Image 1 (cartoon, rainbow, N blue to C red):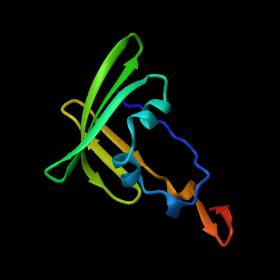
Image 2: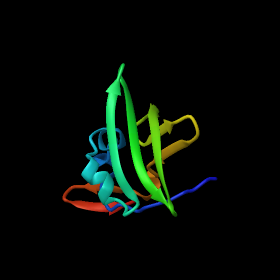
Image 3: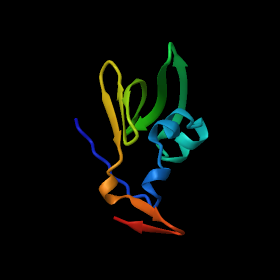
Image 4: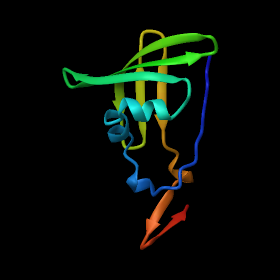
Length: 105
């Protein structure tokens, strides 16, 4: 199964750091993103970032374990034994700060 979700953010592209966002995310922040998000935990082991999350999908509760395998300024790639998660920023739809104003480009 492949699911894609897209969200528009009105924030300057240079102010977005996906790696910092995911590695510093608190359980409360994770749970606030969706009613289905029940819990999460994260840690570094041997210099690698790991995340465990619990969420409801339909009538089922699932536990997902991911290891961050790849990251750049504009994308993250997580792997688990059964799934792959990819978070990317499409800079063609981001905002760029110009002086005191943010302008779309």
